[in-house]
Length: 294
Image 1 (cartoon, rainbow, N blue to C red):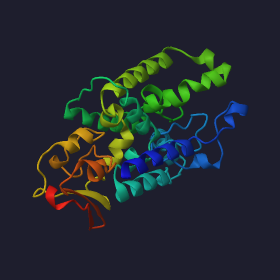
Image 2 (image 1 turned 135 degrees about the horizontal axis):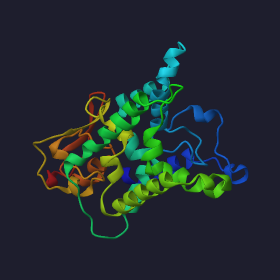
Image 3 (image 1 turned 30 degrees about the vertical axis):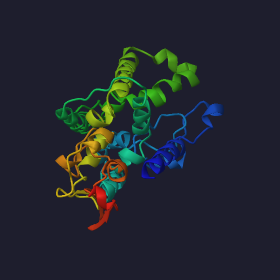
Image 4 (image 1 turned 90 degrees about the vertical axis):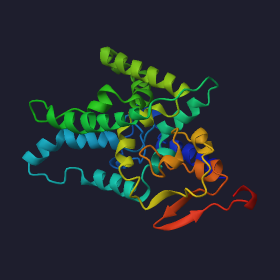
């Protein structure tokens, strides 16, 4: 039931996030008042159908312009973005990655392509903190032009979601953009191609190793109001949670690991022994299991 509902939510959120169809006539991206607000998941600002801002793009813009803001005695420096993402993190941790992220949903669909699947070492999960620290925070903050503004490094040099949602469709909509295509564009196409291939063989490779938004939310996993709980006395180490998990986690190794996206598949489907439960503000919700399975 939960898995079916999650698919419905993922599909609905993808269409809601990208519900501006006026681009068909204007051939321009939407720049109305809704673009003042961030989507909870990764969805490119420059996607022609997008109605929200990208949270990672917004964070980079804050750090890229913070010097100029402080020099001009503007001290608000995007506190809304930090407050918005921080509030989501404190409430549900990485829940948006599993339910509200269009690019995460796309990875799960790509992984359904029949082929032999492979896993990647657990240490690769720390890659996303490298991109969060350097490409989202330090580089936009430290390397600036003569006016004091930095660049949105992750968006410009890495983000495959931006390439897929904006980098490819926008030159098709606006021919004047085609003459701007150069080596940078082809480098990002290569990154996108590699990630697309990886999606087929590896479960959510971008979420697990690169996504700085997932890295940000993951800091709250152990402390959020909604958390997962493991009952070691009921767990039989059958590894069904590991086989079903879209992030390839063994739940019994930690109930609220950094890569857990709170999809609740382990709770709803995998565990037949009642070893997995959901805790909301200290109140535990256990799944009822048959006595002969206990």
